[in-house]
Length: 264
Image 1 (cartoon, rainbow, N blue to C red):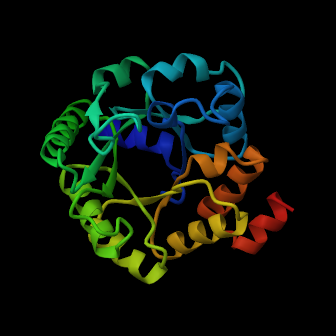
Image 2: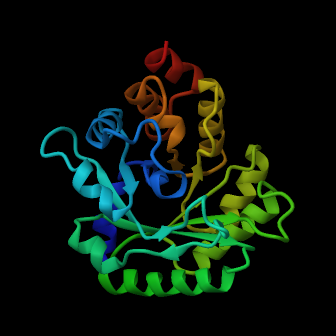
């Protein structure tokens, strides 16, 4: 499993064990969107801001690869669905671990919606990908959310904790889940997940301070970083926002210190 350890250090900071991931897989689900037109420019900005990795689908790699600038880890996303589809909560596999290796990825990610009508299929898919990752020493990030007909509140701490634990039990090396909105309840999520947990950024937010407070509180509760997309790549200052988050996650800054340094 030595290869997996080597690759994990390409997407996580080896000194802290934390990570700042900027997902750019939104084009399949919502279509073309601001911040994801000039891919090389956006990747450059987040790399300059200190992000440890970007995450994208296989078709975007050719439009995002840069032959110069700061290095940054690459996570290949294997799952997809569109908001135009009838069952957008049902994720299917559109790539493989073999393709990730061929494309030079440092890790792969899959998305599962615990509680969706097609949950059994997604569970089976994650199990199969986990087996392939173990075979090839490829780190696996599992995005785990509580979404479906029986889920009344996808931000319910118990539901989030359950989804996160499912990811770990299926073999995730890193778990991505929603933030509960409160450090005390999120601490329970982290405790139950066992594997390192990173928070999702969710929809675009209006307040820089609110985003950074969420990041800071999650770290204080034992989280290992973030996987934030739109609140980074659609920010008026992509590099500055990335650096503000990185300073909190990787360098121990407070919200106030980070805002003053990077966004004032």
